[in-house]
Image 1 (spheres, helix red, strand yellow):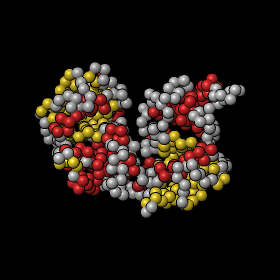
Image 2 (cartoon, one colour):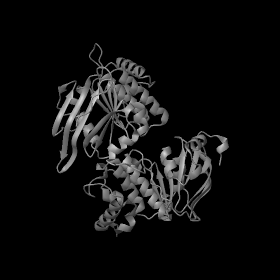
Image 3 (spheres, helix red, strand yellow):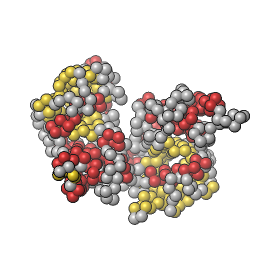
Image 4 (cartoon, helix red, strand yellow):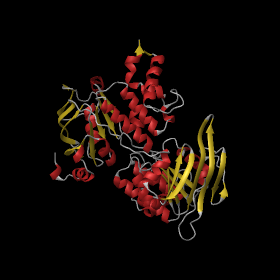
Length: 511
């Protein structure tokens, strides 16, 4: 099946890039069975699919990292066969990843022109010309970034803009944005979208990969869907709906993305009183009971993650108390929190939840090192047995427990983090952005798991920036604004309007 021709009146823009029926295997593993994408000049084209659908493999073919085993690949109508990343860049393709890799000790301008610095009449590198050209690129993008600033310490958003400036300097005709908004705030997303639209209006083809449907429908012109390594279909964004895209992505209807099951709510497991940290949060009072899912909602920077980190003992606080089952927890002592029965799934699973170079089995049992060791040595057989039990229960998809966790999809990595903490049999589970960066099908699995855990009597404190997730899963919603809880809403009262009203600090919703 090839992408459907446009139904627009008139001649469609020229196809700047086409990959048709591409295949890629790694031994017995079929990473891509039928990768097909057609990108037009002057369009923003979404590529969507569940984790493991083949999107990353397709992008790596476009970037020159992989060579397809079969298929047709053309740029501007001419066949190409990339053997290196340099071949892809020379053809006018630039890939911008979720976490750009700039040289931290170089300036912004030096990063843009690395390896191809402009030279003066003497034949030496002209730093003045390099700064001028970099400043001109940022003016075109409408973003004020100092070309002389050292790259170290720049936000992810600014790093991505620098990568885009680099693409423009290379006269890129195709810009691939792979999950570019996952770590950005709302303002930064708006700025990135403005830049992307400017590139589109200038004639570039933008391939945009995201799990966020609101972004896809707000930004893109067409959507291509993949499933199980195969091309499923291409749609004009304005002529399709979210349920249709979801059905094509997962191969079935998801009747309940938020499969909340009513659980018996018992006594308080976590009690927080008067928790305050100067300049971060103040006077935080709440409790989470057994069988209850309590959501911490609010805008970015409201202090939700900071409260969770203080409860778990990662960060300290100036005053207040934290109790688990009526017993006080020592501040700044995560091990005491773990011993008392708290599990903590952090926001950034790659940097804070996993050791990416270790195996799936080792990561799934990191919280059980002491119990699995004898005379200081890990019992490998017991480690594998425990890991096998939990990876099976959470349906972690991996070829082997001995594979490094870095080889797994984002959704399966999140399941390994959950397995690590569930193996401790926690009484309270704190989950910070539990479904960030994972596909819609896996989101439903994680939601079902959280609901099942609550049904077994575990207390759950969930932090989420996705309002549908908050409303769909929480028994109670605590809304924060600028370090304070401005509302405590029961499930029946937690409407989008009420949550947003409190998130912007309307006093009539004060707790």
